[in-house]
Amino acid sequence: MADNSRFDHDLVLAHKFPETTFTYTERDAAVYALGVGACGRNAIDSDELKYVYHENGQQFVQVLPTFAALFSLGSLTNGSIDLPGLQYDPRLLLHGQQYIQIYKPFPSSASLINKVSLAGLHDKGKAAILELETKSYEKQSGELLCMNRSTIYLRGAGGFSNSSHPYSYSNYRENQAPALKIPESQPFAVFEDCTQPSQALLYRLSGDYNPLHSDPMIAEVAGFPRPILHGLCSLGFAVRAVIKCICRGDANIITTISGRFLLHVYPGETLITEMWLEGSRVIYQAKVKERNRAVLSGFVDLLRVTSSL
Ligand SMILES: CCCCCCCCCCCCC/C=C/C(=O)SCCNC(=O)CCNC(=O)[C@H](O)C(C)(C)COP(=O)(O)OP(=O)(O)OC[C@H]1O[C@@H](n2cnc3c(N)ncnc32)[C@H](O)[C@@H]1OP(=O)(O)O
Image (cartoon, rainbow, N blue to C red):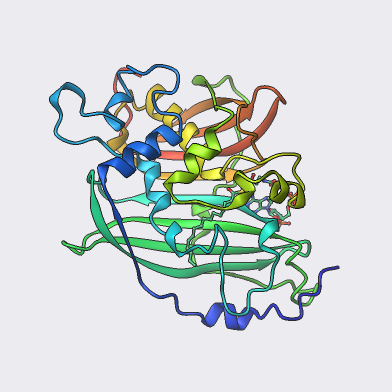
Protein backbone atom coordinates (compact mmCIF):
# COMPACT_ATOMS: atom_id res chain seq x y z
CA MET A 1 0.00 0.00 0.00
CA ALA A 2 1.38 3.40 -0.95
CA ASP A 3 2.14 5.83 1.89
CA ASN A 4 -0.29 8.61 1.13
CA SER A 5 -0.11 10.33 4.52
CA ARG A 6 1.21 13.45 2.76
CA PHE A 7 -1.80 13.53 0.41
CA ASP A 8 -3.85 16.39 1.82
CA HIS A 9 -7.23 16.75 0.07
CA ASP A 10 -8.12 19.97 1.90
CA LEU A 11 -4.89 21.57 0.70
CA VAL A 12 -5.50 20.37 -2.87
CA LEU A 13 -9.05 21.75 -2.79
CA ALA A 14 -7.95 25.10 -1.38
CA HIS A 15 -5.34 25.67 -4.09
CA LYS A 16 -5.86 28.78 -6.22
CA PHE A 17 -4.47 28.26 -9.70
CA PRO A 18 -2.71 31.22 -11.28
CA GLU A 19 -4.09 32.51 -14.57
CA THR A 20 -1.98 31.39 -17.52
CA THR A 21 -1.72 32.57 -21.10
CA PHE A 22 -1.49 30.53 -24.28
CA THR A 23 -0.67 31.98 -27.66
CA TYR A 24 -0.88 29.93 -30.84
CA THR A 25 -0.33 30.56 -34.51
CA GLU A 26 -1.73 28.71 -37.49
CA ARG A 27 1.55 26.80 -37.68
CA ASP A 28 0.73 25.32 -34.22
CA ALA A 29 -2.77 24.42 -35.42
CA ALA A 30 -1.35 22.68 -38.52
CA VAL A 31 1.36 20.78 -36.56
CA TYR A 32 -1.39 19.65 -34.17
CA ALA A 33 -3.61 18.49 -37.06
CA LEU A 34 -0.73 16.40 -38.47
CA GLY A 35 -0.11 15.05 -34.95
CA VAL A 36 -3.65 13.65 -34.77
CA GLY A 37 -3.34 12.10 -38.24
CA ALA A 38 -5.02 14.69 -40.50
CA CYS A 39 -4.06 13.92 -44.13
CA GLY A 40 -2.07 10.91 -42.82
CA ARG A 41 -3.72 8.52 -45.28
CA ASN A 42 -4.25 10.94 -48.10
CA ALA A 43 -2.25 14.17 -48.45
CA ILE A 44 -5.01 15.75 -50.57
CA ASP A 45 -7.94 14.62 -48.41
CA SER A 46 -10.74 17.06 -49.27
CA ASP A 47 -12.07 17.12 -45.67
CA GLU A 48 -8.70 17.61 -44.00
CA LEU A 49 -6.38 19.66 -46.20
CA LYS A 50 -7.90 22.86 -44.78
CA TYR A 51 -6.39 22.03 -41.34
CA VAL A 52 -2.83 21.96 -42.65
CA TYR A 53 -2.79 24.15 -45.78
CA HIS A 54 -4.38 27.31 -47.21
CA GLU A 55 -6.57 25.27 -49.49
CA ASN A 56 -8.48 26.82 -52.43
CA GLY A 57 -7.09 30.27 -51.70
CA GLN A 58 -8.58 30.24 -48.16
CA GLN A 59 -6.81 32.91 -46.11
CA PHE A 60 -6.13 30.89 -42.97
CA VAL A 61 -5.86 27.25 -41.99
CA GLN A 62 -8.83 25.98 -40.01
CA VAL A 63 -8.50 24.63 -36.49
CA LEU A 64 -9.70 21.22 -35.33
CA PRO A 65 -12.03 21.41 -32.30
CA THR A 66 -9.87 18.97 -30.26
CA PHE A 67 -7.05 21.54 -30.46
CA ALA A 68 -8.84 23.06 -27.43
CA ALA A 69 -7.37 20.36 -25.21
CA LEU A 70 -3.89 21.87 -25.63
CA PHE A 71 -4.73 25.28 -24.25
CA SER A 72 -3.71 24.62 -20.64
CA LEU A 73 -0.97 22.04 -21.19
CA GLY A 74 1.65 24.75 -20.56
CA SER A 75 0.77 24.54 -16.83
CA LEU A 76 2.09 20.99 -16.69
CA THR A 77 5.60 20.21 -15.46
CA ASN A 78 7.08 17.67 -17.90
CA GLY A 79 3.57 16.41 -18.57
CA SER A 80 2.62 16.09 -14.88
CA ILE A 81 0.74 18.18 -12.34
CA ASP A 82 2.41 19.81 -9.41
CA LEU A 83 -0.02 20.85 -6.65
CA PRO A 84 0.45 21.48 -2.92
CA GLY A 85 -1.00 18.53 -0.99
CA LEU A 86 -0.98 16.19 -3.98
CA GLN A 87 1.23 13.20 -3.24
CA TYR A 88 1.78 10.81 -6.15
CA ASP A 89 4.37 9.21 -8.41
CA PRO A 90 4.25 11.23 -11.67
CA ARG A 91 5.46 8.19 -13.62
CA LEU A 92 2.18 6.43 -12.80
CA LEU A 93 -0.07 9.25 -14.02
CA LEU A 94 -2.52 8.38 -16.82
CA HIS A 95 -5.01 10.55 -18.59
CA GLY A 96 -8.48 9.20 -17.71
CA GLN A 97 -11.04 11.40 -19.45
CA GLN A 98 -11.42 14.63 -21.40
CA TYR A 99 -14.54 16.77 -21.71
CA ILE A 100 -14.59 19.82 -23.98
CA GLN A 101 -17.32 22.43 -24.50
CA ILE A 102 -16.82 24.70 -27.50
CA TYR A 103 -18.59 28.04 -27.59
CA LYS A 104 -17.31 29.35 -30.93
CA PRO A 105 -15.02 28.07 -33.71
CA PHE A 106 -11.35 28.71 -32.97
CA PRO A 107 -9.53 31.45 -34.86
CA SER A 108 -6.42 30.29 -36.74
CA SER A 109 -4.24 32.22 -34.30
CA ALA A 110 -5.02 33.70 -30.90
CA SER A 111 -3.80 34.73 -27.47
CA LEU A 112 -5.81 33.17 -24.68
CA ILE A 113 -6.16 33.54 -20.94
CA ASN A 114 -6.78 30.29 -19.04
CA LYS A 115 -8.59 30.14 -15.73
CA VAL A 116 -8.00 26.76 -14.08
CA SER A 117 -9.93 25.35 -11.14
CA LEU A 118 -10.34 22.03 -9.40
CA ALA A 119 -13.51 20.25 -10.60
CA GLY A 120 -13.13 17.00 -8.72
CA LEU A 121 -11.03 14.83 -6.45
CA HIS A 122 -11.83 11.21 -5.66
CA ASP A 123 -10.23 8.46 -3.62
CA LYS A 124 -10.62 5.16 -5.51
CA GLY A 125 -8.43 3.14 -3.15
CA LYS A 126 -5.90 1.96 -5.70
CA ALA A 127 -5.89 5.36 -7.43
CA ALA A 128 -6.72 9.00 -6.89
CA ILE A 129 -8.69 10.86 -9.52
CA LEU A 130 -8.12 14.55 -10.07
CA GLU A 131 -10.36 16.66 -12.32
CA LEU A 132 -9.16 20.03 -13.57
CA GLU A 133 -11.33 22.53 -15.37
CA THR A 134 -9.89 25.19 -17.65
CA LYS A 135 -11.90 28.06 -19.12
CA SER A 136 -10.10 29.74 -22.02
CA TYR A 137 -10.90 33.35 -22.94
CA GLU A 138 -9.73 35.28 -25.98
CA LYS A 139 -7.37 37.92 -24.58
CA GLN A 140 -8.45 40.67 -26.94
CA SER A 141 -12.24 40.34 -26.75
CA GLY A 142 -12.54 38.66 -23.36
CA GLU A 143 -14.91 36.15 -24.99
CA LEU A 144 -15.11 32.63 -23.57
CA LEU A 145 -13.90 30.25 -26.30
CA CYS A 146 -14.08 26.84 -24.63
CA MET A 147 -14.02 24.84 -21.44
CA ASN A 148 -11.93 21.72 -20.89
CA ARG A 149 -12.31 19.27 -18.03
CA SER A 150 -9.41 16.85 -17.75
CA THR A 151 -9.59 13.77 -15.54
CA ILE A 152 -6.23 12.53 -14.35
CA TYR A 153 -5.91 8.97 -13.02
CA LEU A 154 -3.10 8.75 -10.45
CA ARG A 155 -2.27 5.08 -10.00
CA GLY A 156 -1.11 4.18 -6.49
CA ALA A 157 -2.19 7.54 -5.02
CA GLY A 158 -5.54 6.46 -3.57
CA GLY A 159 -6.19 5.37 0.01
CA PHE A 160 -5.75 8.89 1.39
CA SER A 161 -9.14 8.90 3.12
CA ASN A 162 -11.25 6.67 5.32
CA SER A 163 -11.84 3.48 3.27
CA SER A 164 -15.42 3.09 4.57
CA HIS A 165 -16.21 6.65 3.34
CA PRO A 166 -13.81 7.29 0.47
CA TYR A 167 -13.33 10.97 -0.26
CA SER A 168 -15.22 12.25 -3.30
CA TYR A 169 -15.71 15.85 -4.42
CA SER A 170 -17.14 17.06 -7.70
CA ASN A 171 -18.47 20.47 -8.77
CA TYR A 172 -20.36 19.54 -11.95
CA ARG A 173 -23.45 17.69 -13.07
CA GLU A 174 -23.38 13.91 -13.61
CA ASN A 175 -24.73 14.20 -17.17
CA GLN A 176 -21.43 15.67 -18.32
CA ALA A 177 -19.54 12.49 -17.48
CA PRO A 178 -18.48 10.35 -20.42
CA ALA A 179 -19.55 7.03 -18.83
CA LEU A 180 -22.16 5.76 -21.30
CA LYS A 181 -23.65 2.63 -22.73
CA ILE A 182 -22.42 1.62 -26.16
CA PRO A 183 -25.47 0.65 -28.29
CA GLU A 184 -25.80 -3.01 -29.22
CA SER A 185 -27.05 -2.15 -32.71
CA GLN A 186 -24.82 -2.02 -35.80
CA PRO A 187 -22.87 1.26 -35.87
CA PHE A 188 -24.12 4.01 -38.20
CA ALA A 189 -20.56 4.52 -39.48
CA VAL A 190 -17.15 2.90 -39.04
CA PHE A 191 -13.80 4.52 -39.84
CA GLU A 192 -10.41 2.83 -39.81
CA ASP A 193 -7.19 4.79 -39.51
CA CYS A 194 -3.57 3.82 -38.81
CA THR A 195 -1.48 5.67 -36.28
CA GLN A 196 2.19 5.84 -37.29
CA PRO A 197 5.01 4.29 -35.21
CA SER A 198 6.29 7.89 -34.82
CA GLN A 199 2.81 9.32 -33.95
CA ALA A 200 3.59 10.17 -30.31
CA LEU A 201 6.91 11.77 -31.28
CA LEU A 202 5.07 14.05 -33.68
CA TYR A 203 2.11 14.70 -31.35
CA ARG A 204 4.35 15.71 -28.39
CA LEU A 205 5.57 18.72 -30.39
CA SER A 206 2.14 20.22 -29.74
CA GLY A 207 3.07 20.64 -26.07
CA ASP A 208 2.64 17.42 -24.09
CA TYR A 209 6.20 16.41 -23.27
CA ASN A 210 5.46 13.63 -20.77
CA PRO A 211 8.31 11.12 -21.39
CA LEU A 212 5.85 8.21 -21.03
CA HIS A 213 5.17 8.78 -24.74
CA SER A 214 8.75 8.91 -25.95
CA ASP A 215 11.18 7.31 -23.49
CA PRO A 216 11.31 3.47 -23.41
CA MET A 217 12.81 3.41 -19.88
CA ILE A 218 10.14 5.69 -18.42
CA ALA A 219 7.44 3.64 -20.18
CA GLU A 220 8.83 0.48 -18.58
CA VAL A 221 8.75 2.02 -15.08
CA ALA A 222 5.13 3.00 -15.79
CA GLY A 223 4.34 -0.65 -16.60
CA PHE A 224 4.39 -0.62 -20.42
CA PRO A 225 6.80 -2.52 -22.71
CA ARG A 226 7.22 0.59 -24.85
CA PRO A 227 6.03 4.22 -24.99
CA ILE A 228 2.28 4.66 -25.34
CA LEU A 229 0.27 7.17 -27.33
CA HIS A 230 -1.07 10.34 -25.70
CA GLY A 231 -4.76 9.90 -24.84
CA LEU A 232 -5.50 13.25 -26.47
CA CYS A 233 -3.90 12.02 -29.69
CA SER A 234 -6.27 9.01 -29.79
CA LEU A 235 -9.14 11.40 -29.04
CA GLY A 236 -8.04 13.56 -31.97
CA PHE A 237 -8.16 10.50 -34.26
CA ALA A 238 -11.63 9.49 -33.07
CA VAL A 239 -13.11 12.99 -33.40
CA ARG A 240 -11.61 13.30 -36.92
CA ALA A 241 -13.53 10.12 -37.76
CA VAL A 242 -16.75 11.75 -36.49
CA ILE A 243 -16.04 14.94 -38.48
CA LYS A 244 -15.48 12.91 -41.63
CA CYS A 245 -18.32 10.40 -41.35
CA ILE A 246 -21.07 12.35 -39.56
CA CYS A 247 -20.25 16.07 -39.86
CA ARG A 248 -19.43 15.69 -43.57
CA GLY A 249 -16.20 17.61 -42.96
CA ASP A 250 -17.84 20.56 -41.13
CA ALA A 251 -16.22 20.59 -37.68
CA ASN A 252 -17.92 23.88 -36.78
CA ILE A 253 -21.12 22.04 -35.86
CA ILE A 254 -19.42 20.35 -32.88
CA THR A 255 -20.39 21.80 -29.48
CA THR A 256 -19.23 19.15 -27.02
CA ILE A 257 -16.63 16.37 -27.03
CA SER A 258 -16.31 13.77 -24.34
CA GLY A 259 -13.97 10.79 -24.13
CA ARG A 260 -12.88 8.19 -21.62
CA PHE A 261 -9.54 6.44 -22.12
CA LEU A 262 -10.24 2.78 -21.46
CA LEU A 263 -6.90 1.25 -22.39
CA HIS A 264 -3.52 2.46 -23.67
CA VAL A 265 -2.72 2.58 -27.40
CA TYR A 266 0.72 1.85 -28.85
CA PRO A 267 1.91 4.16 -31.65
CA GLY A 268 1.61 2.26 -34.93
CA GLU A 269 -1.64 0.51 -34.01
CA THR A 270 -4.79 0.79 -36.12
CA LEU A 271 -7.80 2.57 -34.63
CA ILE A 272 -11.28 1.55 -35.70
CA THR A 273 -13.86 4.14 -34.66
CA GLU A 274 -17.49 2.99 -34.56
CA MET A 275 -20.21 5.67 -34.43
CA TRP A 276 -23.91 5.66 -33.54
CA LEU A 277 -26.30 8.60 -34.00
CA GLU A 278 -28.77 9.37 -31.21
CA GLY A 279 -30.53 12.62 -32.16
CA SER A 280 -27.79 15.22 -32.36
CA ARG A 281 -25.42 13.13 -30.23
CA VAL A 282 -22.80 10.84 -31.77
CA ILE A 283 -21.78 8.02 -29.48
CA TYR A 284 -18.44 6.55 -30.47
CA GLN A 285 -16.06 3.81 -29.47
CA ALA A 286 -12.53 3.33 -30.76
CA LYS A 287 -10.94 -0.11 -30.83
CA VAL A 288 -7.38 -1.17 -31.56
CA LYS A 289 -7.63 -3.55 -34.51
CA GLU A 290 -4.46 -5.53 -33.72
CA ARG A 291 -5.62 -6.41 -30.17
CA ASN A 292 -9.38 -6.17 -30.73
CA ARG A 293 -9.72 -4.09 -27.57
CA ALA A 294 -11.81 -0.96 -26.91
CA VAL A 295 -9.47 1.88 -26.00
CA LEU A 296 -11.68 4.97 -26.00
CA SER A 297 -15.38 5.75 -25.81
CA GLY A 298 -17.47 8.87 -25.51
CA PHE A 299 -19.79 11.23 -27.30
CA VAL A 300 -19.76 14.26 -29.57
CA ASP A 301 -22.73 16.68 -29.52
CA LEU A 302 -23.62 18.54 -32.70
CA LEU A 303 -25.57 21.73 -33.36
CA ARG A 304 -27.48 19.84 -36.04
CA VAL A 305 -27.23 16.67 -38.06
CA THR A 306 -26.55 17.04 -41.77
CA SER A 307 -29.83 16.49 -43.63
CA SER A 308 -28.25 14.02 -46.10
CA LEU A 309 -27.58 11.50 -43.31
C1 LIG B 1 -1.83 22.70 -13.20
C2 LIG B 1 -3.00 22.94 -14.10
C3 LIG B 1 -3.00 22.04 -15.24
C4 LIG B 1 -4.23 22.07 -16.05
C5 LIG B 1 -4.01 21.25 -17.26
C6 LIG B 1 -4.83 20.05 -17.39
C7 LIG B 1 -4.40 19.27 -18.60
C8 LIG B 1 -4.48 17.85 -18.33
C9 LIG B 1 -4.02 16.97 -19.42
C10 LIG B 1 -3.23 15.91 -18.75
C11 LIG B 1 -2.47 15.05 -19.67
C12 LIG B 1 -1.57 14.25 -18.84
C13 LIG B 1 -0.53 13.47 -19.56
C14 LIG B 1 -1.10 12.49 -20.49
C15 LIG B 1 -1.02 11.19 -20.24
C16 LIG B 1 -1.59 10.24 -21.17
O1 LIG B 1 -2.02 10.57 -22.25
S1 LIG B 1 -1.66 8.60 -20.67
C17 LIG B 1 -2.37 7.78 -22.08
C18 LIG B 1 -3.83 7.86 -22.17
N1 LIG B 1 -4.50 7.16 -21.09
C19 LIG B 1 -4.53 5.84 -21.02
O2 LIG B 1 -3.96 5.13 -21.83
C20 LIG B 1 -5.32 5.22 -19.90
C21 LIG B 1 -6.16 4.08 -20.40
N2 LIG B 1 -7.00 3.55 -19.32
C22 LIG B 1 -6.58 2.59 -18.48
O3 LIG B 1 -5.48 2.08 -18.60
C23 LIG B 1 -7.53 2.18 -17.39
O4 LIG B 1 -8.82 2.56 -17.71
C24 LIG B 1 -7.17 2.81 -16.01
C25 LIG B 1 -7.17 4.33 -16.08
C26 LIG B 1 -5.76 2.31 -15.56
C27 LIG B 1 -8.19 2.38 -14.97
O5 LIG B 1 -8.29 0.99 -15.02
P1 LIG B 1 -8.50 0.17 -13.67
O6 LIG B 1 -7.44 0.49 -12.68
O7 LIG B 1 -8.69 -1.24 -14.05
O8 LIG B 1 -9.83 0.83 -13.14
P2 LIG B 1 -11.17 0.16 -12.63
O9 LIG B 1 -10.82 -0.86 -11.59
O10 LIG B 1 -11.99 -0.27 -13.77
O11 LIG B 1 -11.89 1.40 -11.95
C28 LIG B 1 -11.44 1.96 -10.71
C29 LIG B 1 -12.21 3.26 -10.50
O12 LIG B 1 -11.71 4.24 -11.38
C30 LIG B 1 -12.73 4.69 -12.30
N3 LIG B 1 -12.10 4.76 -13.63
C31 LIG B 1 -11.66 3.71 -14.33
N4 LIG B 1 -11.14 4.13 -15.50
C32 LIG B 1 -11.25 5.47 -15.51
C33 LIG B 1 -10.90 6.47 -16.47
N5 LIG B 1 -10.35 6.18 -17.63
N6 LIG B 1 -11.19 7.75 -16.18
C34 LIG B 1 -11.80 8.08 -15.02
N7 LIG B 1 -12.14 7.16 -14.06
C35 LIG B 1 -11.87 5.88 -14.32
C36 LIG B 1 -13.82 3.64 -12.25
O13 LIG B 1 -15.06 4.18 -12.55
C37 LIG B 1 -13.69 3.11 -10.85
O14 LIG B 1 -14.40 3.96 -9.97
P3 LIG B 1 -15.76 3.44 -9.29
O15 LIG B 1 -16.68 3.14 -10.44
O16 LIG B 1 -16.22 4.56 -8.43
O17 LIG B 1 -15.35 2.22 -8.53
